[in-house]
Each structure stands twice: as structure tokens, then as C-alpha cells.
Length: 277
Image 1 (cartoon, rainbow, N blue to C red):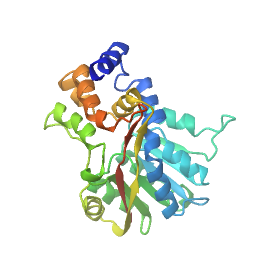
Image 2: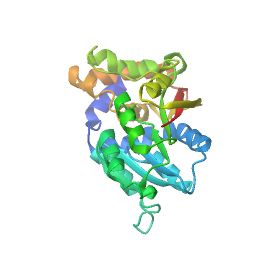
Image 3: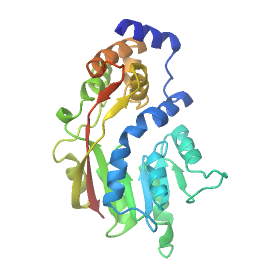
């Protein structure tokens, strides 16, 4: 079974890093796995009309779309132009006009903060009232600067993986780290206090935390492989070895989670921390 799948995927050329097909795989297969996390945070923060959300590392914008659906104004920032372009398309209304006038920044977290700093102090309508980091975690120095730009009392939510032993996807994700070598960063597994420590080092005041089950479920093995590759965590491994080797080991790691009907199911736990500037 495994050699056949690997051969089939190699022959059909899985989407290359940065390609439009890879971006679509993220948006259509993988990103939806995090909806329980997004919704849990928005529910806890009472996100709705009057909330101005800044999504750092917003990717293809599903989290922003859910916030906009609750009536919030949304602003997203991401360094990946292709993902951000798709986010803009998603946030357009059926008539081609923005539903909630979303603002999208093509750039890093620091560039998004610079936009906040450039807003006149009297123009509070452009300043976020909730900041989320569902994608890559910001650095402590970025949080320090964000705190200075926002002023006191704005909630900031940072999220990441739960403990590795509570994440069935861990062996599949570790394929990326093992094949890429020790110099390449793997998934940011969150220890018991890692997110809290990040917030404190960024000068934020801790307010609370939560855990959310985010199972990864796929229609079949090929969907699972395409979804995981769309995370871009495996790109370094492909460069260090080759696509066929990465596919072979990834399918082997996923095989224990494939059900009799062909679906792939992996229970995972994610964590988030709420802190304030």
C-alpha cells in the first residue's frame, strides 16, 4: 500500500512550495482543522460588533473570516503574498465589495506593528482591540513593541501545539525535523508553561489560558499528505533529501491513523494563552 501511494503521488507531482496549488491545499484541506481553536478564542473574548481584530500570521484568512462573521472588523498581516491574496478574496462579499472593510498587510509582524504606530493617537477606530497569533508565534521583542504601540489593556492571544504526547500528529510532523536535520526548526511543541513564558517575556500581563481539541481528519491518505505538506514544515526536509523519501516516511507515520474506510484521523490538543498589554 505505502509504495503504491508514494509512487502515485510522486508521479502526479505534489504541489511545489509556494505554488498556488499548495496555498489552496492549505486553505481547503488543512486550515479548517484549526476552526475549533479559532472559535474557542473568539467565544472566550466575546468577539463581535465593535471588536477590531488584528490577526498576526493570518495566512489565507479563515480565522479572520470567522471573526468577520461575528460582526468584528478585521485586519490581517502575513509575509506570504500568495496566502494573503487568497485571504483578500475570501473576505470579499458576494458583490465584490468587502463585507467588513478588512485591511491586509503584506509583511512581517513588525511591519504590522509599524502600521499601528503610524495611526494617529486620536484615530482609535483603526487600533485593534484584540490581537491573535494563531500562526507562527511572535518573538518576545515583537510583543514588547506591540505592547508599546497598543497601549494598556488590549488582549493578545497566542496559540500553539499542546504537549506532544497529546497530539497524534506528532510522529508525522517529526518526519520533517528528522529528515531536515538538527539545524532546521520543527514544530513548536508547547511545554506546560511555554506560551505563558513567551507572554511574560514580551511584557504582557497573563489573564488565562485554555485547551482545545483540534483533530486532524482527512478523506483519505492523499488528502492527509497534501494537507500536511501545505503547512510548509516539510520543505526543508524535501531540500535536504528528496520528495520521494519525505513522502515515503510521511505515509508510514500516518498509516497507524488510517481507518478501515480509508479516512485518516488524528486527535490533537492545542493551547492558547490570553494576556494583556
